Image (cartoon, rainbow, N blue to C red; front, side):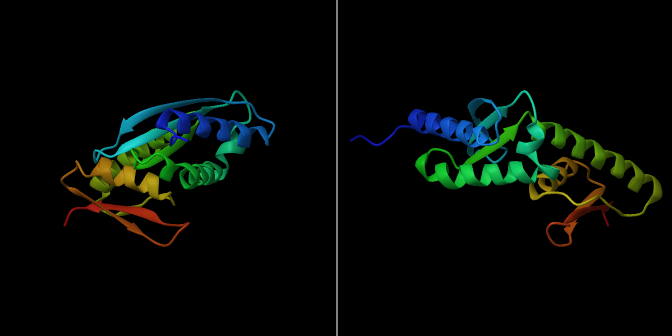
Length: 161
Protein backbone atom coordinates (compact mmCIF):
# COMPACT_ATOMS: atom_id res chain seq x y z
CA UNK A 1 0.00 0.00 0.00
CA UNK A 2 1.28 3.45 -0.89
CA UNK A 3 2.14 6.01 1.76
CA UNK A 4 -0.63 8.60 2.15
CA UNK A 5 0.02 11.91 0.43
CA UNK A 6 -0.41 15.35 1.97
CA UNK A 7 -3.86 15.87 0.43
CA UNK A 8 -5.13 12.61 1.98
CA UNK A 9 -3.69 13.60 5.35
CA UNK A 10 -5.34 17.04 5.09
CA UNK A 11 -8.67 15.32 4.45
CA UNK A 12 -8.11 13.07 7.46
CA UNK A 13 -7.29 16.16 9.51
CA UNK A 14 -10.51 17.86 8.42
CA UNK A 15 -12.57 14.73 9.16
CA UNK A 16 -10.96 14.39 12.60
CA UNK A 17 -11.76 17.99 13.54
CA UNK A 18 -15.34 17.68 12.27
CA UNK A 19 -15.74 14.53 14.36
CA UNK A 20 -14.25 16.16 17.49
CA UNK A 21 -16.46 19.22 17.09
CA UNK A 22 -19.42 16.93 16.46
CA UNK A 23 -18.98 15.47 19.95
CA UNK A 24 -19.84 18.97 21.20
CA UNK A 25 -23.01 18.98 19.06
CA UNK A 26 -21.55 21.70 16.84
CA UNK A 27 -21.27 21.87 13.09
CA UNK A 28 -18.31 23.44 11.36
CA UNK A 29 -16.64 24.18 8.06
CA UNK A 30 -12.90 23.73 7.73
CA UNK A 31 -10.47 25.36 5.33
CA UNK A 32 -6.78 24.59 5.08
CA UNK A 33 -4.12 26.67 3.37
CA UNK A 34 -0.39 26.56 3.12
CA UNK A 35 1.48 29.57 4.51
CA UNK A 36 5.02 30.60 5.28
CA UNK A 37 5.71 32.26 8.61
CA UNK A 38 8.03 35.20 9.21
CA UNK A 39 11.01 32.82 9.48
CA UNK A 40 10.27 31.10 6.16
CA UNK A 41 8.85 27.97 7.80
CA UNK A 42 6.05 26.11 5.98
CA UNK A 43 2.85 26.15 8.05
CA UNK A 44 -0.46 24.41 7.48
CA UNK A 45 -3.13 26.90 8.60
CA UNK A 46 -6.44 25.30 9.57
CA UNK A 47 -9.46 27.62 9.87
CA UNK A 48 -12.51 26.25 11.64
CA UNK A 49 -15.75 28.16 11.17
CA UNK A 50 -18.80 27.39 13.27
CA UNK A 51 -22.02 29.41 13.06
CA UNK A 52 -22.82 29.20 16.76
CA UNK A 53 -21.25 28.53 20.13
CA UNK A 54 -17.67 29.04 18.99
CA UNK A 55 -16.94 29.92 22.61
CA UNK A 56 -16.95 26.20 23.42
CA UNK A 57 -14.14 25.61 20.92
CA UNK A 58 -12.23 28.75 21.91
CA UNK A 59 -12.63 28.57 25.69
CA UNK A 60 -11.52 31.11 28.27
CA UNK A 61 -8.57 33.09 26.89
CA UNK A 62 -8.31 30.62 24.00
CA UNK A 63 -7.41 27.65 26.23
CA UNK A 64 -9.71 25.18 24.46
CA UNK A 65 -8.40 26.37 21.10
CA UNK A 66 -4.82 25.86 22.31
CA UNK A 67 -5.73 22.32 23.38
CA UNK A 68 -7.41 21.56 20.06
CA UNK A 69 -4.35 22.84 18.22
CA UNK A 70 -2.07 20.72 20.42
CA UNK A 71 -4.08 17.57 19.69
CA UNK A 72 -4.10 18.26 15.94
CA UNK A 73 -0.34 18.89 15.95
CA UNK A 74 0.35 15.76 17.97
CA UNK A 75 -1.69 13.54 15.66
CA UNK A 76 -0.87 15.03 12.26
CA UNK A 77 2.43 16.93 12.25
CA UNK A 78 4.61 13.84 11.78
CA UNK A 79 2.30 12.59 9.03
CA UNK A 80 2.89 15.72 6.92
CA UNK A 81 6.68 16.15 6.93
CA UNK A 82 6.60 19.01 4.41
CA UNK A 83 5.06 21.24 7.11
CA UNK A 84 6.96 22.36 10.19
CA UNK A 85 3.87 23.57 12.03
CA UNK A 86 0.08 23.35 12.08
CA UNK A 87 -1.89 26.38 13.29
CA UNK A 88 -5.59 26.07 14.13
CA UNK A 89 -7.94 29.06 14.42
CA UNK A 90 -11.68 29.18 15.19
CA UNK A 91 -13.83 31.91 13.63
CA UNK A 92 -10.65 34.04 13.19
CA UNK A 93 -10.27 34.33 16.99
CA UNK A 94 -6.47 34.37 16.85
CA UNK A 95 -6.43 37.03 14.14
CA UNK A 96 -8.80 39.35 16.02
CA UNK A 97 -6.96 38.67 19.28
CA UNK A 98 -3.63 39.52 17.60
CA UNK A 99 -5.08 42.82 16.37
CA UNK A 100 -6.34 43.57 19.87
CA UNK A 101 -2.99 42.74 21.51
CA UNK A 102 -1.08 44.89 19.00
CA UNK A 103 -3.43 47.81 19.67
CA UNK A 104 -3.01 47.33 23.42
CA UNK A 105 0.79 47.31 23.06
CA UNK A 106 0.79 50.46 20.92
CA UNK A 107 -1.31 52.27 23.52
CA UNK A 108 1.12 51.15 26.23
CA UNK A 109 4.08 52.42 24.16
CA UNK A 110 2.43 55.84 23.93
CA UNK A 111 1.96 55.91 27.72
CA UNK A 112 5.56 54.74 28.35
CA UNK A 113 6.90 57.47 26.08
CA UNK A 114 4.71 60.04 27.79
CA UNK A 115 5.36 59.06 31.41
CA UNK A 116 8.93 57.74 30.98
CA UNK A 117 7.88 54.78 33.19
CA UNK A 118 7.83 51.08 32.33
CA UNK A 119 4.44 49.40 32.00
CA UNK A 120 3.47 45.74 32.31
CA UNK A 121 0.73 44.35 30.12
CA UNK A 122 -1.68 41.70 31.37
CA UNK A 123 -0.90 37.97 31.19
CA UNK A 124 -0.67 36.62 27.63
CA UNK A 125 -0.04 33.34 25.89
CA UNK A 126 3.34 32.71 24.33
CA UNK A 127 1.82 33.30 20.91
CA UNK A 128 0.48 36.71 21.96
CA UNK A 129 3.73 37.74 23.65
CA UNK A 130 5.65 36.85 20.50
CA UNK A 131 3.32 39.07 18.47
CA UNK A 132 3.96 42.00 20.83
CA UNK A 133 7.75 41.48 20.84
CA UNK A 134 7.81 41.36 17.03
CA UNK A 135 5.53 44.39 16.64
CA UNK A 136 7.51 46.56 19.05
CA UNK A 137 10.91 45.47 17.69
CA UNK A 138 10.44 48.20 15.06
CA UNK A 139 10.45 50.89 17.79
CA UNK A 140 14.13 51.77 18.37
CA UNK A 141 13.42 53.60 21.64
CA UNK A 142 11.36 50.76 23.19
CA UNK A 143 12.50 47.54 24.87
CA UNK A 144 10.25 44.60 25.74
CA UNK A 145 10.82 41.84 28.24
CA UNK A 146 8.74 38.84 29.27
CA UNK A 147 8.49 38.30 33.02
CA UNK A 148 6.73 35.91 35.37
CA UNK A 149 5.69 32.30 35.06
CA UNK A 150 2.91 30.66 33.07
CA UNK A 151 -0.01 31.23 33.11
CA UNK A 152 0.70 34.75 34.40
CA UNK A 153 3.65 35.51 32.13
CA UNK A 154 3.45 39.06 30.80
CA UNK A 155 5.40 41.68 28.87
CA UNK A 156 7.02 44.77 30.34
CA UNK A 157 7.38 47.67 27.93
CA UNK A 158 10.04 50.23 28.78
CA UNK A 159 12.20 52.89 27.20
CA UNK A 160 15.39 51.54 25.69
CA UNK A 161 18.26 52.31 28.10
